Structure formats: structure tokens, C-alpha cells
Image 1 (cartoon, rainbow, N blue to C red):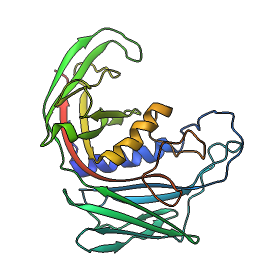
Image 2: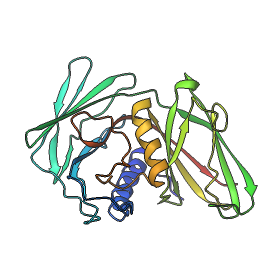
Image 3: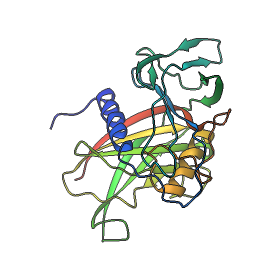
Image 4: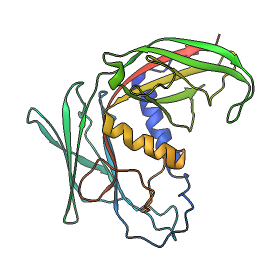
Amino acid sequence: MKNISFVHLLLFSLLSLSLLSSCTEVIDIPLEDADRKVVVQASLYNVPGFSQVVLMQSGSFYEPGDYPLLSDAAVTISDEEGNSQLLEETQAGVYSLPSLIGKEGMKYQLDIEYNGENFQSGSLMKSAVQIDSVSFEMGEEAPFREAGYVMQVHFTSKNPSDTYLKFRLLVNDTLINRLYLYDGSLPRGGAGQYSFLTASFQKGDRIQIITESLDKEAFSYFDQLSELTGDAFGPPSAAPANPKSNLSGGALGYFAAVAASLKEVVVP
């Protein structure tokens, strides 16, 4: 079967996430209606053409699934060397530049001006983490997992105790709608390895593993979101259970500088 390049795979992954977010349910918590807030979903990648900032408005408990996209904002990303780029609104509520690409080891700042409000966030692009090898072990049916092969990845990090990873899996070109996180400061499977305990695979499955290296603050957002909802693909609602944002100014959401790498394997 023809291999997918990293750039095309990442594009497919991002497009799939966009589709998934449109059908994710809002948490069913019986709270009083809350003021709508600006929601930011901003990612700066080390791959050209995929960095973007999405602005929307949080939904009401009484209007689930209603997340209007926000246009006419001024969105700027700058680095610690003084370089600054004003993003273009390529479609309603989506801001990007084809040439926008992050550099590993660089600190970045996001500035957003919208409707008289200002939101800011900073993020450090860590070093990309490469997967050295992948192993499989046959596993029986277990809670949240069907019978099949369980996958474990082994990787090398320059600073294992300060490594924060988010994995995305595509199996036979289909994105798995689940969040996988690795926190190097905790004993989650040991240093330099991660087991996908809630996923099972069959012989001959082709698996693409996208490894996304995050700084601690961005990782913390996804970690909290995973614990609260079990799903990191939907826009948050204006509820007390929202994960803590790394943005100032009262906005919900996140800004993440992401160093991504790709590994492709076939289950033997």
C-alpha cells in the first residue's frame, strides 16, 4: 500500500480533527447559563502549512453545539528574536499563513485582539521526539479494549523527566478518536516508552503514529481536558469544569507550540 508522507498525514489528521469536533457532545452538567466566552484553539507546528488559530464563541448549556466562529480579529504570533507575523483570516474564524512554521527551542507569543478585548499566551516549542521502535503483544479483551495486539512505542528524549507528549493514531488511514498522553515526570509506563492500553490492533493493520511534543503548560490543558471529558477534540463550554487555559484575558482554550514527528508500522 502506498505510504503517506508526513505532511499529507498531518493534514489528514488535522482535517479529521476538524470534522470530529463538529459532532462532539457538550458535557451534560446541569448548571446555570453562563456568559459566552472567546475560545481559542491555536497550534504552531514545526511543519509548514499547518499552523493555525481558530476563534469561536463558547456555547450555552441551553444551546449545546452552538459555537459561532469569530471573524475580524487581529492575530499575531511572534518569537523571542523579535520576529512577528500577522495571520490572515483564511476562512471564517480561522487564521493562518502558509509560510508560518515554528522552530524547535524557540519561545513564541500569541496575541489576539477581538472586539475590544486582548488575549495573550506563550509557548515553548520543545524538541521533537522520535520513536525508535515499536513492539506488539497479543492481549485479551479488557475494559475499553477489544481482543487484539497491544502496541508499545519506545523513544528517546533529550530530557525524559521534562517530556510531555500527545499521540495521534491513524489505523488504515482512519483517525482514532481518542487522546493519548505521556507525562515524563510521572511513572506512566516507565521512561522512554508508552503503551496504548485502550487500543487493539489486528495483524496487517497499518498504523501511523504522530508524536507531538508540548511544553508543560500546553500539555496540562489536554491532561485536564482528558480527565474531565475523555475527549480532547471538542470545543469547551463556558462551565466551571473547563480545564485551565494558558491564555490571559479570560479566554478559554489553548496555545501550543508543537514539534511533531511521524512513525509508520505494520502489525506483523
